[in-house]
Image (cartoon, rainbow, N blue to C red; front, side):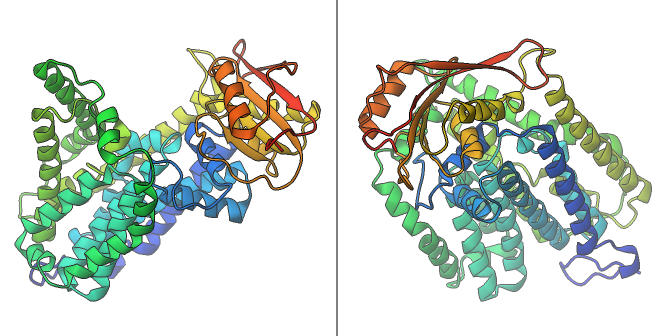
Length: 507
């Protein structure tokens, strides 16, 4: 029997309604499969995870002016618990992604009538390419922004229902986490507030004096990093000009065309696969009125329209000429929830839900297969993946050459982070982040190492000389050549200079 009270979601019989325990079981299975698969496929770290392991040597207020530090803090904590291992970074990745799924499910439960449909709404992320593919290989800070956006949405819906002090504090905490995760969270956060103001049931909550608790909490939690950032020689305005407007030209029309091209790509990649599946399976959905929460549905619809509207306005103003997929990670993830809320009707056929669940399962299985093949193919069908790079073998070769502990100064790319896997007691620094110089734990050797294909050797040696006071230009250079994992021909060439007794601050 179905009961409805006001704007609240209908209540379905408990026996027929899968709930939080079922969702957590499915989420655990999903995360467990991917963690096990990733650890089995490759012992090395790709670019983003290698950078996080490098920066996890110390706990700082901020690390990189271009990236807020929330994910760095999570990685630091994971390394403290699990050691400087591949597992620490992989567990951190899927714990963060799991939080995004969890809060999305909790928010969907407050919107949709059917608990089972809320589970499908959360796992609909597998139909959005950045979450079905990129989230398993490259995203870090963007995953933290997604989790914060998911928590922010859940907190806003809770706020609309209760208006309690705890709800206001929760929303402020979620907003702080978002801005500490990624600057592009501002698009989602600002749009969510605009959408709340445009929805009567939420407007009164946002305009309440209690909303000062939300603002105060967010400001208080962001203040330490904000003070750190203010001392850096890189402002938000400069970053915006260098990244978002980097393709700006003297032609206004060319800039606008470029902006709409990238926005179209984003919408196609994020929403295209889901849109096709949704239309195929639900084009003959129930004909009765939706039973989902009307105010929450309006909130989500207004949010998505505001996000697109702001992007279009920025493009027309000539302010946005370039977009990256990861920048919009928090932007469109609620689109499946909105679509499913419109078919959440009393006469929705069970077979449609079963087919949709089956489709999600098939797509996820195909993604697992594709991730596996992408590594095992080696250099067949083109360049090998980053997870095929034999950094583990390079580490063993450097150990055989006599390096045990001290300072490792590396060139660009993931080499530095991967060498920390092999030498967890060493201080590891790299040319890409010249300002990050953690203190040396003890006296030791000095190893300067670089990938022959990616580094400017004179620039690296000059940096080592200026940053560490160690002149190594006259030292003999040795080279290691190792074949990529599962590859037939592709070889990684790494050169190094090893000084057994450290010089200057290279110890």
